[in-house]
Image (tube, rainbow, N blue to C red; front, side):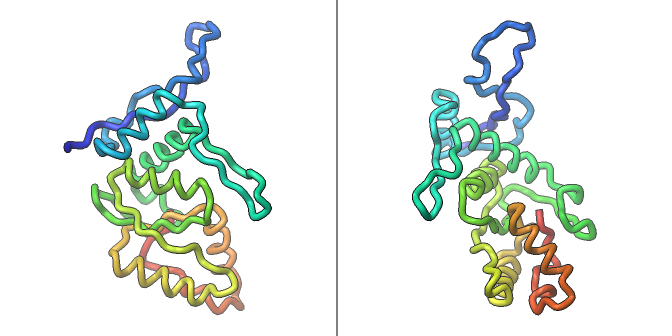
Length: 196
């Protein structure tokens, strides 16, 4: 099956004519015409977003069994669309490492290194929407950064990753570790692959 253009999942919450319509229940398509969906999983998910934008896609529970985050179909599609847009329009401005530049083409590989949670699913779906292959790695373990980072570097090098996608917590850990002059792992973070 041939890919079809993926819609932008931005919702229109402000009416342009001043009326109080329920425009926030609709998902509008616009400028992400170059981001693709497959005619299988993503197109089915997109149809669900269009027909049930406010229904719950997933809920994340903490160790005590209490819900901590919940995503509607619209929210997961929007976040995935934002990530796909960043990946599709990749350039040096998106890199957290200003000295490293990268450019992504369809089917390129990126390492996806997120903590466990719903943002991981948004990042994974964003890779699918951008027609980029996500190579998953466990997030670095602060109690064993040396071992975790050696594995991450091996995976990034082995798959020829163009960049490493990380969430805010992992980026914070990376920056703090690299600034710590006493850290034994500060030089183990992948150096030749930009973090995004």
